[in-house]
Amino acid sequence: MRKTLLSFLVASLLLAACQSSAPAQDGKKTIVVTYSILGAVVEELVGERVNVIVPMPDGQDPHEWEPSARDIETLTKADLIVQNGLGLEGGMEKALGQARDAGVPFFTASDHISVRHVGEGEGIPTGDADQTEGAEDPHLWTDPLSMASIAAALAEQIKTNLGIDVSDRAQDLQSRLESLNTEIANSVNALPAENRKLVTGHESMGYFAQRYGFELIGAIIPGVSTQSEVSASELSALKTLIAENQVRAIFIELGAPQAVTEAIGQETGIKVVELTTHNLPADGSYFTFMRNLAGVIVDGLR
Ligand SMILES: [Zn+2]
Image (cartoon, rainbow, N blue to C red):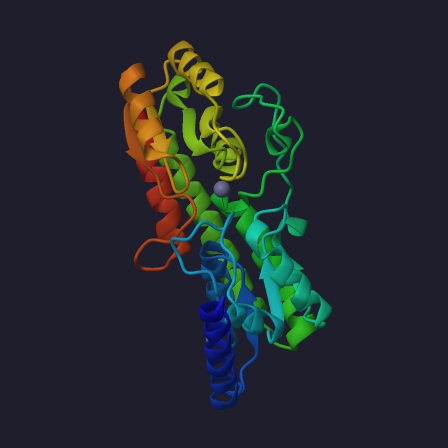
């Protein structure tokens, strides 16, 4: 108890020190983005014209990550907050509410795309709220054309909220995202239709699947969040689906239980391939992220 109080006091002092020593650095406006992949796209959009801060360290799970007192301070001082929406930022909800109460304007990416809903017979029906047919899927970043729509809408809002014109950069970014989409569609064409079947850590590849003609067979954690539980009966149902569909690989990702996945791979005799779905590659580029994502899937299912 005493230690907690002391840590709190130290943290408060540090926070106070940081605040006084760091006044609006270069006079630029600041956009705070809730997770790294969306943050990378926002950086491509604004370039040097606006500061972009992503409080969540890359490699953390955006479904679970909770901000510190200092991160909450960063959020409430932002000129604009860019969030995903559709429940992705589960652990940040309270902090985002505080920023909203403080009058910070919000941009919600999922308001500007065609939201995907969990389809009939997709994955493993569990009665779990976030896996129920019709539930909204937050993983919009796996579709470059959704990101293009988001960039266009965000450019408008940056003009409104910050008085900064990034329309030239928005046009350039949109055309690069469209080229990326064509490039991925071409590389996926190397796969026969019957190989385009996905089993992933959780139900994270829906937008990618929809865009490039893949079927979602199931997930180790049956839900659109990593927070759902796994039961023995669901895992046995998944094994049956893998065998029936002659699935060629299981893609394991952030937040999935490694041991369970390896066991399923051994029991079904198919390979387990690591897939990065929720964090950026070393160069911090969304374009590299998507090329890696598509490349690992095409190689894994060939
Ligand atoms: Zn996810």
